[in-house]
Length: 213
Image (cartoon, rainbow, N blue to C red; front, side):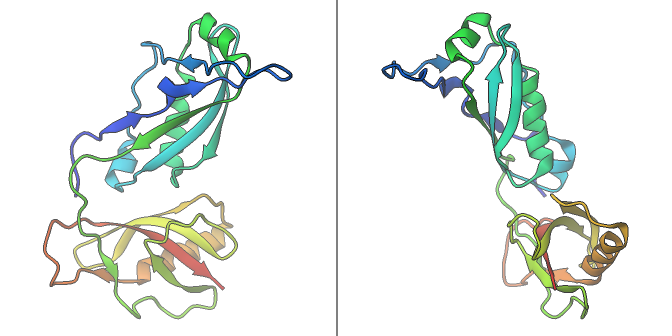
C-alpha cells in the first residue's frame, strides 16, 4: 500500500480569470491570486486508505465581501470523497473585496489535483469466472472508472489475503436497501488475486463497476 502523507496540489486558483462584461471589448484577463488565508486541502483518510486519486474541477463565484459562493462541481474527480473535500476547502477561503470586485460576479474555475505519494502498486485482478451467476448482475468489470448509471454501479473495495472483497462502497448512486444488500453480497462473492509473474509492491485496493442486467 501507499502510506504516508498525501501530496495534493491546488492547481488553478492562481490562474482564475474573470469573464469580460457583456457588450464591452474584452479586457486583459484578470487573475485572481489565492489569499494566504485559504486553508491547505486535506486528503480524506478514507480516500487515502482506498488509494483514490483524481482531479476535482469546481466553479465558484465571489461575494462582494470576498466570501466564496455558488460552488459547484464542474467535473468530478470520480470520487465524492475527493470532490466534497475540495468543496469544503474552497468554501473556507476568503478573498479581499478588491479581488471580488474585479471578478465582477463571473463564475470562476479551480482545480484540486489529488495525488498520493509513492509509486503505484500492483492492484489485485479479478479471478476469471469467480463471480457467481446472478439474475440481477451481469458481472464485475475491474478498474472501469465510468460513473454509476443505468448499466452499472461503480464501487470501491478492499481485498483480504485470501482474495475476498471487504469494505465494499458504492459511488454516486443511492440504491434501494434490498438492491444494495444484494450488490454487496455479489461483489463479496467474487475473488481476486495477483499474477505471480508480476513483481513489485502490491496493494489491496480495487475499484470497478458491477454491471446490471
